[in-house]
Image 1 (cartoon, one colour):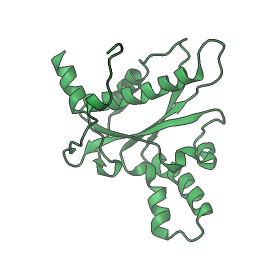
Image 2 (cartoon, rainbow, N blue to C red):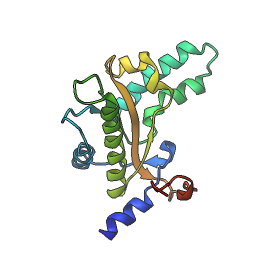
Image 3 (cartoon, rainbow, N blue to C red):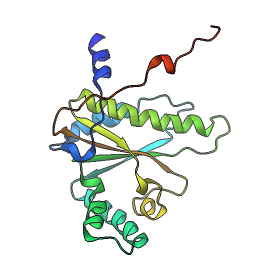
Amino acid sequence: MPEALELLKTRRSVKPMELMGPGPTASEIDTLLRIASRVPDHGKLAPWRFILFEGDARIAAGEAIASAFRADRSDATPEQIEFERKRLARAPLVIAVVSRAGPHVKIPEWEQQLSAGAAAMSLVIATHAMGYAASWITEWYAYDRRVLDALGIGASERIAGFVHIGRPAKPPEERDRPKLEALVTRFGN
């Protein structure tokens, strides 16, 4: 048990541009997704799904991002457009966690959304446990309907996050963490 606690204490996000290959193998990806699926899920709805962006598919998806960017910014430079095109190619693997939360007779949407967030966090932790690094981000294109349509995200679905996965190019630096005394109260005191 102490090893698991140490692992949790050392988890740190690594910027996508600081992730390099090789990424996880097919077997490791399968393990990551199985772990990410073992989260609280009231009603067993699986109110989330995963989209994998690997290899050339990362650039193909980036075309949709670059196209939307270019459409909104007629003054965009070629360098800016190329940067947008490579948004999902900065890490060897990107896994989109898609929330499929919706109205249900017993299960509030909020609980379903939290389950999608738990899936994303479990994915991040499992990545760290395997010796890789990850960054869970959304960025502007996670909210752009043109990009979402191109990526196959349904009208009632939302991106919980894009989890960029790879090997850290350098050891991640620690950052200040919230002060618990500012966040914790005890009921009745």
